[in-house]
Length: 116
Image (tube, rainbow, N blue to C red; front, side):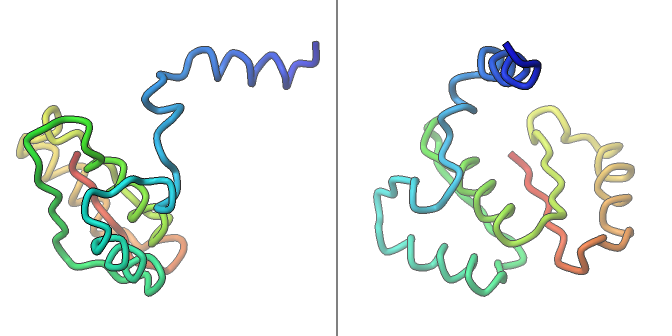
């Protein structure tokens, strides 16, 4: 077997199934309210999202993180993703978030912070 095939096989084997099958495009997401799809498509098309976008649901597995990832990666290449359960201290804000905010984007586009 070629080395590339072995690396790919190892990567697939070690990928968590949730991440492996997570939708990568907005078209692959099932929305309970289809009227929202148009709003999300407009955000992606215009590459403009509201300054604060909040997805609320008490239930896990409803697609909040998936939608945040799809929208943020479609709008900008400069995205900081933080686990809001683990990275919620003032030190994270002072060091990671502030450092991310004060630097210039390499791609000359908006920068996005996603707290999951």
